[in-house]
Amino acid sequence: MELTQENYYQDKSYLTNSRFKRYQKCQAEALAVDNGEWVEDRDETPLLLGNYVHSFFESEEAHKQFLEENGEKLLAKAGKNKGKLKSDFLIGDKMIESLKDDVGFKRLYHGLADDDVQKEMIVYGELEGVPVKGKLDSVNLSRGYFVDLKTMKSIYSEEWNAELRKRVPVAVNNILGFGYHGQLALYRELLRQMTGKEFRPLIVAVSKEKVPDREILKVDEEWLAQGLEKLKADIVEVWDVINGKREPKKCGHCDYCRSQKQLGVVVSLDELIGGG
View 1 (tube, rainbow, N blue to C red):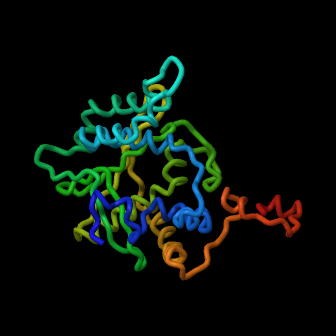
View 2: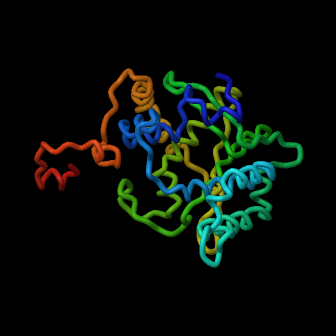
């Protein structure tokens, strides 16, 4: 299928990074969602907030369309703020304000006057023989880089990272925890397949704090390589599950797995301590 802006989200013939990550969490639940047998109960607010900010910097038309399609979800339905933006989305306006007049951001995200910059560019290709696609926030084809705009709780506040076994800035947990290093590496590979050129991936991080912080972040090459290897390690198995060639694995702990649970096996205290 030829991918277009109109059919991109309906198309299932290519695997996306976000869909792949759902299968990494629990193959059984992800397949049930794909087949319409299970509806995820998740908070839409972070996704809506991210898209609210993204659409503003894509174009005036894209932001207007987003507001027309999602306006009711953004507005308070009761109380003194009825008809106004919910408090969850007021921070979106602050995030937009923090970036829209930032000279460095404008130069990076929109490029210079003569640059060939594509917004929401569709990329596609194969990874380990699996058809994969993605959409890039901003690609500067003239200067050989692309930018992913990420909204985060914070950038520099510290949190514990179990894998690294130390406290790290929230931005680190955000990038590694959500697999953004793999996503960037995948997009770079798809761009290389499409253009024959190497592109430099960058993240513009903007925080959801009362006074939003912002940074241009580079993911080091070793992290990009690690992220891509994680994708390669599981992508064929996931694609086989999607196409009915392999039975999906159950994680045993998500909402879907709990809904399917039947008692029968006795679990010991030591097994609980060891993670079940």
